[in-house]
Image (cartoon, rainbow, N blue to C red):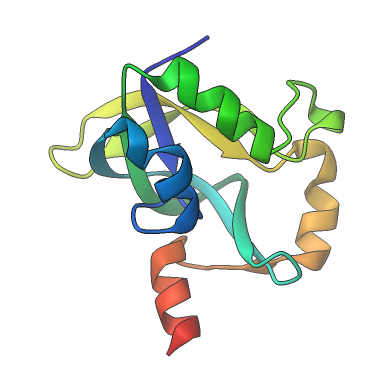
Length: 141
């Protein structure tokens, strides 16, 4: 199922390299947003991933009619095959709350596979506030 909405929380955030490569050329609308999960930092890889959970995950929602073109490119970098045990990250449709107005909408989101949750819990570092941009800023200072 394709929606025109994509929620991102990590390397696809505006201003970062993957945003410039995969999203900026399509000039998507950008809305500050949040959803639920638990954010982990993968020190060996240098980026965050999200596992199911109840903490707040801060990010943005992109809206573009070009999402059917954008998503397959992002699927490729996230090694999403549609099969939990064979994908690095899974793309799922989740409820996302827009910060301006509180409207809840459906959006695509990439999540860590449930089948590898134990590995993540043993090897990842939890980012308690679920804010990758703040974590990066603190890490760089």
